[in-house]
Image (cartoon, rainbow, N blue to C red):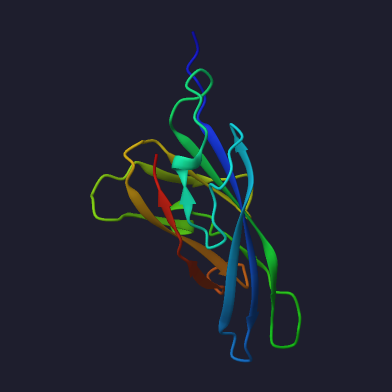
Length: 158
């Protein structure tokens, strides 16, 4: 008998931003639920908050762990209207920071996705606790000349 797969949640992260004449970024992010397996609704809020309790868990087909994939897109322009490159940092530990809220147990592990516009969090627990996660995006790559921007929603676990 084989082990059941993790549930999967794909989140679109759409950036809209501008660099001023000094190169200082001003960026907004909006989030949307791209895909879930099993099919689920109302898991991702526009603010980026994630409610894993809304994942429709079917123990016959999935374990309780969830792989959360973030897919980055959008537009950032400089002061002259030219497009500016952006991506997740190459090191997954620099691309996302995960902090427990009011507790110390954290079994959420960031890992690289399928390229610089994707990062994955492997959620390996079901403690019903809340976590704050902060995505980091490099603007004006390649690093280290680029600027790192932090985005900061939260995750409520199963």
